[in-house]
Amino acid sequence: LRPEVSTETEYGMDLELFSKYGVTLTKSHNVIDDQLLQPPPPAAAGFASQWTNAGQLTNNTVEVSLNVPLVASRHVDYSVRFNYDRTTSVITKLDIPEYFIEGTMFKMIQGGALGQIYGRKFVKECGQLPADFQARCGSGLEYQTNADGFIVYVGQGNTVNDGITKNLWMTRLPAASAPWKGGTGGDPLSWGMPILERDAGGAVGVLPLGQALPRFRWSAAQNFRYKRLTAYGLLDATVGKSVWNQGRQWSLGDFMHADADQQGKSVADAKPVGYYFRAISTGGVGGLYDVLGPNNNTVEDASFVKLRELSVGYKIGSIAGVGNWNLALIGRNLITFTKYKGFDPEVGLGGGQLGSAVLNANDGYVFPNLRQFTFSLSTSF
Image (cartoon, rainbow, N blue to C red; front, side, top):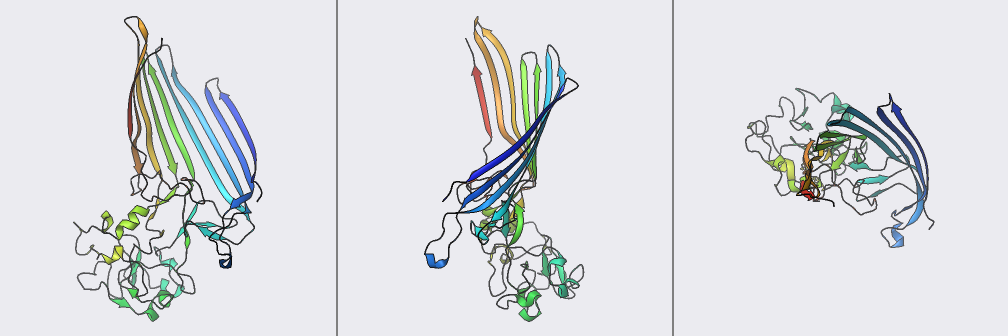
């Protein structure tokens, strides 16, 4: 084994505009050669993995910050600082055959992005069906979009709302008449059930579903002072990041997630438990529980805006001529605005071959970032 070699070129610029506004621009280009990887060796070797120098990773980062002092006087100060950054990581060279890690969640492939999440994909658009089925897909046709956004088989003269009233749930389309001819093993297609996308040969594919690394991040920090009173607030945002909500997916098998709760739904909207929990089987019966691996139902958009910190301080001064006392109240991780269905979109599993919770975007029963409140009373002499 040889040591990894990292070469980085960085450019930076600090500007002051109108003797008031501060701008910082930074761009870096980083190349890591002879990456130490753990690909699976041939089965005859008798080992699950083997260390080898086999890859090159190229990272590009852009950072921009803008400091805007809005008010500056004897008694009042108010300034805002904006930050933006974007990083891309691409496997630019791989001297060995492509391979999966962390099960099939991530793929090491030349030209692929590091952190690209893979998994099984349920059909959501008519164009994902075989060409001869696409004309039979749409409103009023045999294949329609249900309330969850999935294309399902309903048959001629039916709608996605007829499952209970017409007793259609668990009726089946014979394998010979199903898309991809039922797929590997000649599976039939069950009425109303999500349909897994397959390749031309009928095999269920492992396809790109999302990216663990965000498209970009931004933050806005505000500092305020009025005489002895100070305040600070920080908004922090991540955009274009995906996370596999493993806890949500596995809980479907135990009927423990709100997705499977039919309370309050009408007869037209309600679905049987098999729609959610049953693993895809050769009998053509299966739901979103699938095979316990990532799929496009539980690999979710984890973009968020978070009130990262809010603090208020007051400079008391000396008490009875002793010390210089300060009082502060600080709150962290106060509010998160997101469409993510887990506890916290800012999670991941450490360890593994990726070695980073940032890259291993798996919400697998890990603790979320906790909301914290701190009270402090300090002095100096």
